[in-house]
Image 1: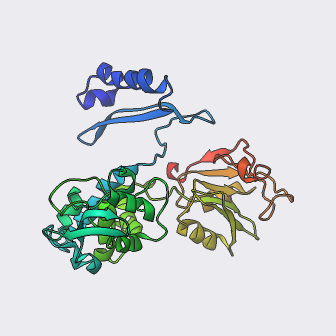
Image 2 (image 1 turned 120 degrees about the vertical axis):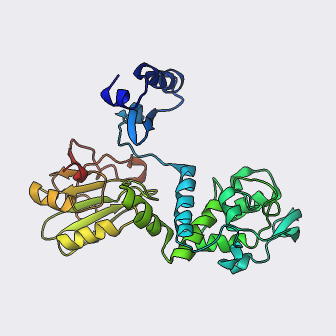
Length: 348
């Protein structure tokens, strides 16, 4: 039993059963690679325990600062963002959604048929903001695979696990205007893209892009520095007079190089990008590398004096890294994993 466990009023031996259960039933049988559990009471952490691996392929153990995809836990964050605007008097819960999305004024309910030849009927009443927040809107998800309506969602790539929608959030909302609802708003409950529409309402009511609103009004005030739609940028920077910054796209094999003029420009570019996996600074000048790294909004920076290699692309940097496997993309000759010295700007 730790001091913090005693202070929060928990029995340490009983909290230990959480680890034992997860290890016995999930980690050891290989059902999951690892787990990170936290029990908190009145703002005090009573139990915080990493188990297993964060990277099964490379044997990297789970850590307290491991970053996870939170999937549908994005929903409460999105709803909090909208309710902040409610507190500022921007809307009422029973306001019709078409007040801000005019294309939704005449939504209709599915009766029969297939996309695009649906048979529909009028809604019994307009959809409200409350309906979106409580999943009683009549919207659906493509992955439900239950009705002809969600089949149309899959065809358009809306809320689908396969095909992705080709446009942005506003365009997706407009596309939904052309599809029928599963039921009249308020008549039933259905897990759906309602929260996506809530995110669009945040944009319309605040005048800010959704991710920027979350960053400025939710994440930064709460110190949630590692929370966002993308993990912190991967930055390969050779801090020499001919400085270069390398950015790796988070969900693809794209490694691009952007030249920059000086340290200030390098930091500006690094902090502006939305894509990436981690953060790296390369330099033989450790003091300068720390200075540049400390001003980047990255979760971890590796100070790396790896030599340049003229055979490599993008200026000849034979980099080290702890990212994903690149061999299938033909870059294994240039992204060679080596021992690096890790340093976190937040730990200064």
